[in-house]
Every structure is written in structure tokens, then in C-alpha cells.
Length: 353
Image (cartoon, rainbow, N blue to C red):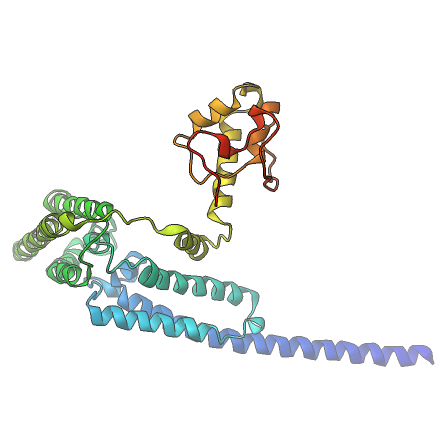
């Protein structure tokens, strides 16, 4: 009697569980499909605006194209990024399958990183390297994915658009730029000129189509002239007005770590962990002099970073003890002996405010 009652109940619960699983699977399938459509739509627009990135990924329908960096185009792409960032906030991630949830996280961070480049790093208005490195035709040489003449036609198309790159740089870049950015951009553009004059010509020696090579020669000369014009403009117009404000700052550094690597540690914590590990690797316990830890640290890491942090993992050097795998919490106040003094007592250090 009892058994005949238990079996139907077990079967009933089993049926309910199966219905729940089927419903969950159905919800996941619907959520996955919706997110897949959204992500495919975003990625299509992403590659359309970044054709050279698409070519690098192997999408050769974008061969011969370059990005449009006019102000109107930049504004439209920024608007598109913000729109998709907002649309992703409406996705019910609890209904996504595990695989799609990871794809969601990757896509969300990728969009945040693009917005970071636009709005925080300001790469299109503050960094001339963005434009100096845009003419990369090496993609068409180093990969033998099509007959060389076909790839050469793409090179010609790209080179013919070089004046547009230079015009966008002159229109978009701020009046005063960071000196290291300017100097590096000049070096990049100069290196590209050398490549166009040397290695590129050598790589195309096997091309026997005279008319095509004549067209290439004209496009190549024009591209070289445009890049030389950029170098001259940076040297004459930008270097005299250069500033030294190139540090990205702690807040932007944390954003960069988060959006690129999904690292949530503070810069101070990363520095502490890095110095502790470097010390442990370079100076095993048997090599540390009991009374020489302070001089050893100063020699290892000159000039000492400021503001410095107190690191008990390094301060224990008096006991010749290597740092633990997980550094302990920081302590405050001076240690009782000179060898155990915190980092703030070392040359070049000051207490963090």
C-alpha cells in the first residue's frame, strides 16, 4: 500500500523536474539566441568601422579598406558603442547558458575598453600614434592567402587613401600634445616610410605585371609623401607646443587593467605583489645578508617608487625569510629595528597620504 503510493509520487516529482529542466533549457535557448543576434550585429558594425582589424583577423572582404577617422565618423562610432553598451545592460544574464554568459562578459568588457579608448584615453584627439601607425600594408605581404597581384591591388587601394589619414590627424588632434606621443609617432611614421621604400619593394620583385607595378609606384610614392608630410607637421607644428602630461593616472590605469585583463586589484597592491615576487626570485633566502636587506632593496629597485608602501613581506628580510605566497596585510608604524623598518624609511620614499 505504501509502496504503491510512493512510486507515483516519485514519478510525479521526476516529471516536474524534467519539465523544469526543459523549461530552463528553453529559456536558455531563447536568451542565447537573442544575445547571439545582438552580438553578431555589434561585431559586424565593429569590423565595418575597423576594416584593417578585420583583415588582420582573416576577413578579406575588407581588403583595401581603411577606417574613416573623420569627426563625423568618430562621433557615430562613439554613439554606436554607447548604444550597444546600454543594450547589453538589458540582457537577462541569468537566462544565458554558461558559454553565452562568458561571451557576454567578454563582449561587455570589449565595448567598455573601446569607450575607454575614446573617452578616457582620447586616442583620436590626444595621441598622434593612432594615425602614424594606421598605414600597415605588411598584412598583405606576410600572408600568402591570395595571388601576389591580388594582394598588391589591395595595397594600392590602401596607399591611395593615405592622404585621408593625414588629413584626419591634422583635423582631430589637439593643439598641444604629449611630447613622448609626438616623438614616438614621428618614429613610427618614419619607420613606415623606410618599409615602403625598402622591404615592400623587395617583397614585390616577383610581380611581372608592368602596368600594375606602375600604378603601385605612383600610389607608393604618394603614400611616402603623405607620411613625410605628417612627420614634418608633427616636428614643426606640434613639438614646439608639446607638453609633458602623458601619465594616464591611477583611475585610468585601473580601468585599463579591468577592461583589458579583468584585474580588479589596485595599482598599489599590484606593485607590492610584484616587488615582493621580484625580491623572492632574485634573492633566495640563502643569499640574503642578515644586515644588508636595506641596501639590497635600494640597489634592486632604484629609484624607489613614491609614494611607497609598507611591505611586511619585504621588511622581514632581517630574519632572511622569503615572502609568503600570499602577502599578509599591511602594517602601520615603524618597526622596532632598523632592518625591519617599513619602505617609507628607505631613500626616496615618503608616506602615502
